[in-house]
Length: 120
Image 1 (cartoon, rainbow, N blue to C red):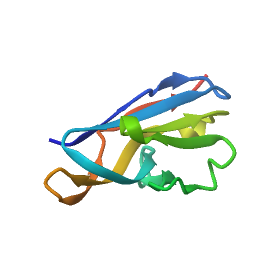
Image 2 (cartoon, rainbow, N blue to C red):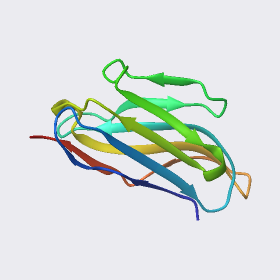
Image 3 (cartoon, one colour):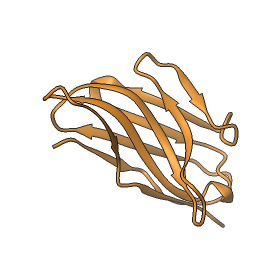
Image 4 (cartoon, rainbow, N blue to C red):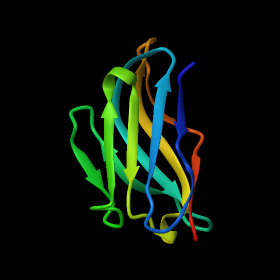
């Protein structure tokens, strides 16, 4: 069974940093695009950053210059380095990935989410 597992969330003071990780496991033939989304209380889920299998990257305007997405294909893992965190970054962060499974099914998967809280 394929799953995405996030880690690295927590409580941090404004101006601080966190690094999120999302590891894909299970019967995976290939991983395509990988993304980080976030959802703040009372708000819709929004795309934070994405990275294609070829390494093309895009960011939401609100995080440009502060967040960095990267991936390690050998480890089936995507990362989100978050610097200069602000209280408005507080949200549940979700990993999302396009996968081709061992049974040759092309599916989109979500992780369970990890809480990031920025507060003094």
